[in-house]
Length: 266
Ligand SMILES: [Mg+2]
Image 1 (cartoon, rainbow, N blue to C red):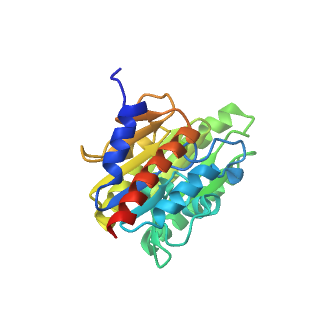
Image 2 (cartoon, helix red, strand yellow):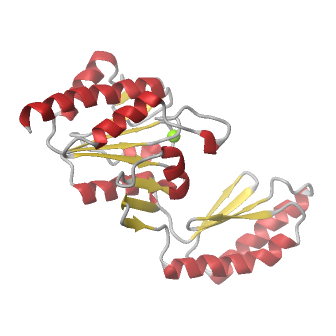
């Protein structure tokens, strides 16, 4: 395993980034700013992390954005972010550049595809005790965890897959444990980060995340950017911090350096 930047070497990189003319700081939320909790609705950023990101957001030429797998609505709720702070939800499917520029996961045509899909699957799911449909921003998921009859659960997965793709062969299908997901559109956090970079044209990007899906965003960074992995998992990031508390310290360092620069030159 290659040595990732940490300690003084990471501080030096944070200082380099902090002084670029236009800086995009894009951050995962759960596990990166907010400690993991059992109830997703109860997750909140650490006070130090929240204070640092709000202060960075207030600086000129500094864009702070949250990039999450959560649906946009959920991210806005737990993130308690100002309306003009950009949010990327549903792993890059939903974009909110500011309060007046919100791109939903699906357009009217896609929404009609999801509605048609739901009407094809509902009668099949209704026949199986314990099965249920979860509505997603760009599709839906059929859950069978509560189906006691394992034969019925296996048949259900086959039946919904056949009925779904029979009416719409462009659907993305993902089979998980006790769940089959259907989506009319697909995206990654890498797509979300690219959209932010196109919109805000930064000179450098700081991205931090803790989970497997954050690797998609870390992978689109270039040499001028800095990717930070939060936690001990394998990563393509160049730097690592231990936990959200350490991430807050890194953000405070960027803030202090950038605020000093801003005060001196503007
Ligand atoms: Mg996370």
